[in-house]
Length: 94
Image (cartoon, rainbow, N blue to C red; front, side, top):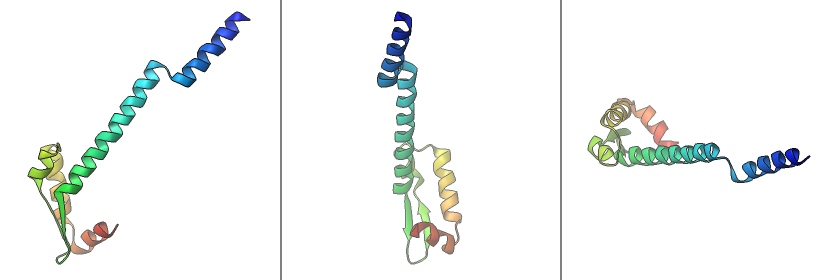
């Protein structure tokens, strides 16, 4: 009986406070989410939409200064600047 009680108590404690691996996984998930948000903001701030021409431009140097890798910044520049005016307008309007 005392073994069952100890197991129930241990499981209850772990479910309330979390086990160290569960806490580490949750922390990693939180850090991954924060990193994704930081990256999204950096990419957003480095992009510029020209309303008159319905075209995007992208500042690679600004993105790199915000922590984006060179390859990611160049890839985003190539993508945004290759959009047709209609595609660029659709993305901008979302």
